[in-house]
Amino acid sequence: MSLDEGQRIWKVRSPTQRDSQEMEELIFSLQKETGLSALTLRVCILRGFDSAESIQEYLAPRFEKLKTPFSIRDMDRAVERLAQARRDAVRVRVFGDYDVDGTTGAALFSWIFRDFGFQWDVRQPDRFKDGYGLNVKAVESAVEDGIGLLVTVDCGITSFDALKRAQELSLDVIVVDHHQLDPVRGLPPAYAVVNPQRKDCESGLRQLCGCGLAFYVAMALRAHGRKEGWFAQGAEPNLKQHLDLVVMATAADMVPLTGDNHILVRYGLDVLKHSKKPGVKALMDAAGLSARELSPSHLGFVLGPRINASGRMHSASLALDLLTTEDAAQAASLAQELERLNAERAEVQNQIWDQVRTRVEQGIQEGKFRYGIAVAASEWHEGVVGIVASRVTETFKKPAVVIALREDLGKGSARSYGGKDVLGALRECASHLIGFGGHKHAAGLSIGLGGIDAFAEAFDQAIEKLPEEVGAASLWVEGACSLSELDVRSLQELERLGPFGPGNPEPVFTVRALARNHRILKGRHLKLNLGSGGQTQLGYPSGSQIEAIWFHGAEKPEVMDQLQRFEEREWAGVPELNRFRGQVTPTLRVRDWRKLEMTE
Image (cartoon, rainbow, N blue to C red; front, side):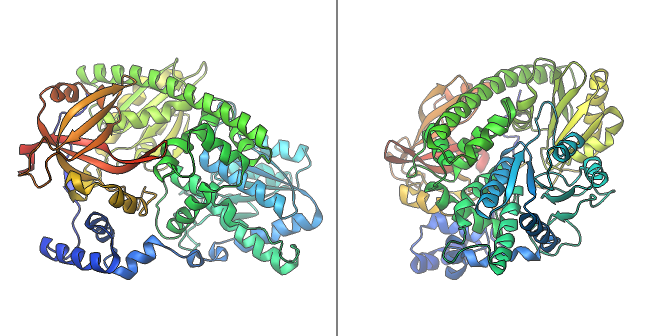
């Protein structure tokens, strides 16, 4: 049972220090200067771009505006140590996390070290055998293999035991990680720690993901190599070609898409469309995406899940091999295997979600899960519990923990709702856990088999005590628009404001419309045709209509019941362009709906 209709609050974004008349006058003026639609200009102004110059700079950012990589603390030290490894011809090992960010970061280093003349190899932890991050076994294996320098990417910042072991074995480690430092223990004992989250780092690049940070290491290393004469004249490696990896990681890792990240993703999307990497091209082909059809939304909904499926269902090395191969035939084969794993992931995820939803609904009826949800079962797949936990928070509007039980312990994922700090909640429940880690919005944990019920009660109590961010649980909308305004031209302009994510939220507009017809997809989703129903007094031409998709809408009994009433309602959704077989059509991705009388 999800929230009853109307319990989610809609809030309209408003420009600071401007009333509605001033807003309309500014839009009218900017239309003359920029030629952009009123719909696009409203979003720009609400994001703080209220002049033709600032809008143009946002739509066409300059690559040269990126901050210097040497502004990051320890970057010079890391580059000098890498250069020494190249000079001494010692083998460098890259150790990357198993998610999209870590895998693409490891792939980027692989391409860079190849082009820069290094001896190197790559390793990743096994999600099921090793768990997250650098571990003691990985350090000892590196020494046994004759590795002279270890470079982590997207992990290592809290791997104190592993890094202490590396010191004991005289193995230098460069940590390249964007995650937060341990608030008590601080910096780990590594040769260099390249992490903008450090308190003594004034680079202003805290928003970078792991792969993005690896790109800055590559820029710094190339600058050093240029001075040292590593590259023949006219043969200096082109780093921009690797922004296809950076853009996929940045979108998947949900880091703020502002500042340098905005520049990286804008250029990265263009590079991705014309990627020369056999694996990237094969990944897009297997997903049924052409360069013409690729849009910012495909980063999070199509490409990211396929790369992640490797580490979730099998081994992250499969995706890494795909992103680093130079053989087109091998790339095609690996991409098809990833496609199979992603389909398996989706099926397993849906099966677990159905069981979790039933369990939570029953628990709520019994008076459980008043503030936070925690459920566990032995038949649930450890690789997808994080995705399911996100679905739980979206549906039940509460922070949630979903735990997969093994023979010896449970491994779970926590997700926030309403801005509540789930990592802080886990700290309050530490006595019930074997271990935990993460950040405010998402965390992982391990727990003994006998402590599930006690933990669930403690988590519920901990969430009750935590403050909720003002407006965090609300649905923020740009304002109302007519169906006729959602045309191809306006939606193409809106696409140019993306990719969307933290710091650059996707624009949600409200429209008044009637669901003329609908059909259910895969037993879960709703495909709708929204139209004006011939009503001209509502401010749009008679006959205006748009196709709409409501993911998981068919799982809501109250929605299916209301659809039978054939009433005009107010819909909140994200306008997007659907590209299929050469056809480009406007569509609305529905986020919520409500009765018309509630808007008065």
